[in-house]
Length: 631
View 1 (cartoon, rainbow, N blue to C red):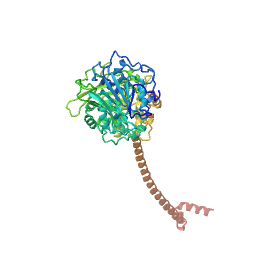
View 2 (tube, rainbow, N blue to C red; view 1 turned 45 degrees about the horizontal axis):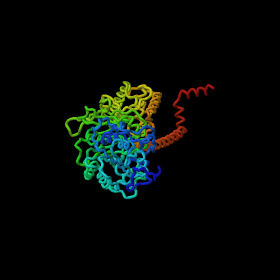
View 3 (cartoon, one colour; view 1 turned 90 degrees about the vertical axis):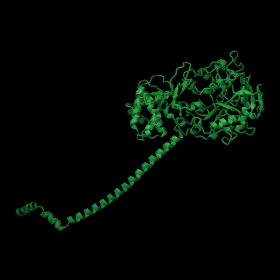
View 4 (tube, helix red, strand yellow; view 1 turned 60 degrees about the vertical axis):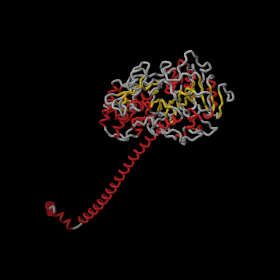
């Protein structure tokens, strides 16, 4: 389609950007996936079983892969595939009239879901090419192209979605309004009893602490207004709540999105973060390295954030669900949390709902059809029920995470991550603790432990080991000694790459350290088992040798090498001083020896020495005299 051939459902309202596309921007908008789709599904009205899918939806549309649109052949998601939560129709808190407005760019799977479920849907985009593409894909969708301040809806909406925030609602044609002004304009579009779902990125999120690149370079060409200078931008959850209340909205639930603001995979509500969540959850909520330039280990930093109860304050992104009074009499049946693992979505439940069927799985086929991830399907990790202690209360509370359709409840593994225990023991040079833990680990592996486990994905509660998630299984069942050797080899690689202290000689390489650890586990292996362990690690898809150390790890290694070099130079200096002193003593001893030798030579040449030497042997002298006289 040419730029001048806009669909009839595309309306220009002013401030439209004719040559700009948010969907093809390299920085990209927030890549919401299964968790957002599950949450929005609960807010939307139930699907109409008598309605048909959009006949104008091209099933073979293959857009730009960076745009977040569904690619590849196959039917578009219809009403039957859109009910992803597994709940009964009409049981959710969604509005009945179903007027929905999407503000800013959103993943195409979410747009398709809204179009299939809402009785009247509209989209507000600043990009004219994106608006034309969306209008062609959904002829029944009202597409408004322009900036937010120029948009005036005919009627307020029952549900307003701005999951990407307010940054991409401005235009380069006019100065950007303050964040609170944009929020007021957005809140004015919410009908009484309607809801607003707003995403707000945290400038002090944990993802900013692990990213080495400056945040000012994330946006690229779309940052016409420098970020970080708006005094009205919320600096925390309390400021966000106050801003929503000043706009005439009541905050129903505020979620913290993890692991980063670019592709959130988990939503945890304020109520869920009030509990001491198990450390096993930090593995699913920590950022992956991928193409990022890390300044610190994301897994370790995420564990520290939750351990110090800063999960909400340091969340990469906040997702607020607010309602305009008067609120509906129906309870807001929103989940305490949603965690996405692989192709499945799991719901966090409270203690009251721990014995109910409250966790719903997103079908793998629907998640695959959305193609929002852009990754191949894999075995979903099962994140089961968790037990947590609420600080400040006498008893213990229970936070459950379960997965349907089987309804089987499995506890989240309690205890500490094995890698952290080993790193602490190495830092203390507690060889006995390392030997005890590695011996128990070897026994667990020989009893049929997970072949894909690693020290950073195992937890130990003092009695038993448990894998945090089910990783990809190898094609053939490897021998237990190969599995144990792989686990210890990965730990040795990560330990040396991070520059952590350990009680063994530093010149050891990863292979040598692995064999040392195997010996401490009571197992004697050689290079053959080590080669098989590396092949197994490459087969499982996570080669430890390819792990790039974080910037802080490099600094720690540099400091350690600097200290070792300083100690070596100091020792060399002491040895040189001692050697110089010994050389001087040797020179003096040699001079004294030469003087003594000269004195001895002069003494031997004297007459008295010769006579005394002759007379000191009278028998020899007598024999010589007798021979002379007889001769």
